[in-house]
Length: 413
Image (cartoon, rainbow, N blue to C red; front, side, top):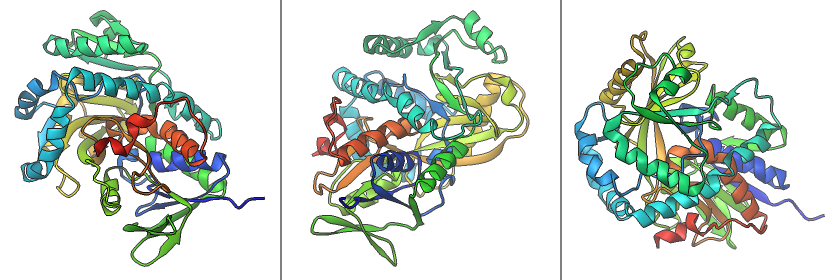
């Protein structure tokens, strides 16, 4: 019998763990590295908990550029900058602007739709093997807006219709019937019936991680600093140790760029900083996640209470948490639901974002035994299992009927 190929994965978030489980299904021997324990306070812990297979319309769209200045000036708006980071962001922003044409938007939307369409079935393959204990709810996800942002919303609805996304445009009365506790500031919305949400993303991730260990997977708590090669085979290096593999997967989200830079591949990955707070004991106020699009925030009912998430801040990995962004979330939550108790758990996490808002999934351009799986921006939680399934197929050298070229890192060269 031939020897099992040894695969190393850098990153123990939803991408890394999903990659590991699908690689195990194909008979590979898998080791995951992370500088922190799985389920730590990174993006896979602190996200909105949405499984959002409908979210194909990207942020790079023709109408966004006229909106950005107003967003930056508004204290209740979804966007903020750390000014000390602006010089570093300029190359990314210039690439982003070049991607804001209708044709580029449609290119991203079409290729996001291709994998989003497969996202829930890929999750179900993994969920079949664990006891979910009511941690996933299938009650849909509701987006609402007022007339100020109608033009942008009409664009999204039209694009999703073209792609064949299942969406139900809802009236104010229907919104009220779905979520009677929201204050009636809205004029319209869309209800995605087949959206799901996590009652506790961390617990789900840990259940999947425990499954990985039960199936013979190894986890090493180690900060991987570099990758070297011997006869094209990767050697993963921490401060004090080296580990030899047949192939490796880099799946450490916003922290992936340090490793890809060391591999001499210039991938324009940058960081969107996302925030959350919890209002404990209030999760009965909503039945499902609700997103208010004018202000770019959402609220998800979770075990920890109501998790209020949102705002995009460009400020890199090193700047401290912004109290102004936290205040913004608290004010927005009260705007939606009225009186709420004192908030808890101020959290900041990092979303890995590419200027064309497509993830990077596939082999490195310089090293055939290195695979990338990062850059999923706001959809990392939704796309973990399908991305892992795609990578496991690539590593097993299976044929696929998917067009995977749009996710390749070589698009930046």
